[in-house]
Length: 284
Image (tube, rainbow, N blue to C red; front, side, top):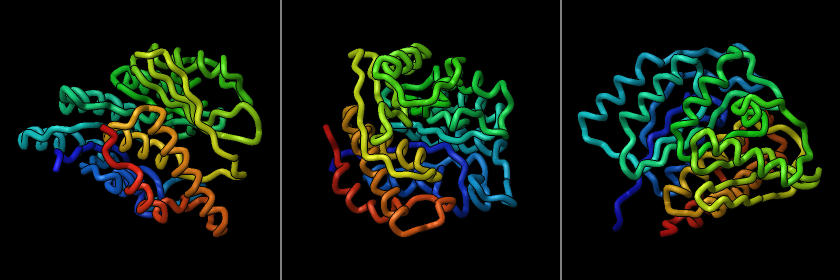
């Protein structure tokens, strides 16, 4: 049997609600990859549409965890970050990258900070600039359209978009440092929605779409980014990883919509894990 891949996932964990580590752990594990978790905070629920949640900050625990790992001589095929709750955490994670990155480690940054044209209210205006510094250290970033605009210091534009605009946005994002970019929330009409990817080494832009399902579903960005991260760790090409992630995410949304589940609670991705496991073996 070949060496089992290992990914360090650095996210918060919500005790209820499907996002962050609650999503990354089962999805990446189902793809046959060991997940080592660094929780940045513990919340009673996720924050999307749910009030009164508890929040325990674990900022002071991050570096001690990593330093203990260093004593064990652990190696990682990937380091994957999502929601970071403060400017201080961004600076710490930049140090974590330096401590854990190996010769073959792929760093994936999902710069979770904004949506629908606005920075999340919990973040100061200086947050995008700090997040940009973290993206400079990444091999792959996975922003949505709002986050892309904030990372570049540009005005947010509402869709539908044009292929030329998306291609330019992808190339400008790659100019920050990452060799690969996946941009979510891309659409050229109101019938389909999906993602666009860019590989700076080949200067190639790809689009992957699926039929649009009406509604706003929490946690889908984490589902999508986790599948991309796992697929690429298994050797998938960027387009293959994005296609797998779009199909898996849309299937979860469709199940949730059909069941009439409270959309605040996240999407039913669990029912698709067995199929994901069968479709996400080694691509090498």
